[in-house]
Length: 134
Image (cartoon, rainbow, N blue to C red):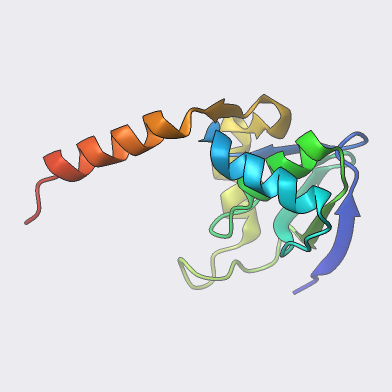
């Protein structure tokens, strides 16, 4: 595996993910942490083109990415090669599989919608009440 840790300047590269909305309260907490000097775990990404990166599953990192984008601070990342194996899901699955699945539907981190946390909680409570367990 060819992991290398880098700090991505989100003003110079485009970072994409696969989630279109995040909790406004969580993002606010991340931004406050960044401003206070907190150190966050790196986000696992793949470099897709010279200046485009994709957040990889299953690790995610959208909250950290959006928070750093808003705070205008470099994002600590681990860059995986496209032919590296993934960690988790399926044995022998490659990073390439996630890139091929997520790249067409990618969401630019700067376009992620900050969703009112109260609506997220209400939706969760509704799903919890209506879920059918077998």
